[in-house]
Image 1 (cartoon, rainbow, N blue to C red):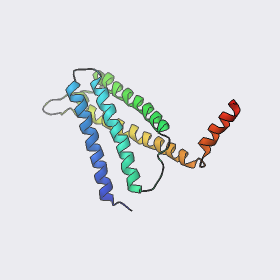
Image 2: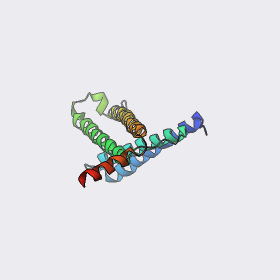
Image 3: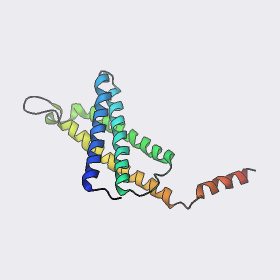
Image 4: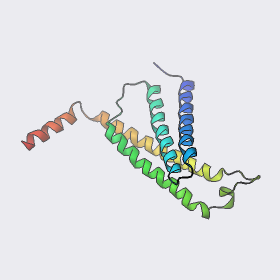
Length: 159
């Protein structure tokens, strides 16, 4: 079953919308807390990564295995650390950035820093999708039963 490009784009738009809404739903009620921006961005980023991954997988409609869940989560956790570092860097550099990026007034809306942050997050997301694809491909390249054969060899060598 082949999906049309319109359905794929519609799925991607929904993923972006849900990720944005989740980020705002977590950030806005807790914005007085210093951790709120990190929690909101990490939650939205997680929805973005796995939502786009799911949309891409359903558009291909192949029966490909996603790979070991532990490896996928480990890669995602590493990239979440990078995301937290990116957000921290954006907040830490704010006093040193040009006036046009950090000031909101009637002539310059406050979109400069947010735009740079979003572009950075999208670049991180692309890198993570590449790594997750590599994890899934490496899981597919293993011969059937190879993981269980390794475990059997360990049990035999321990006895």
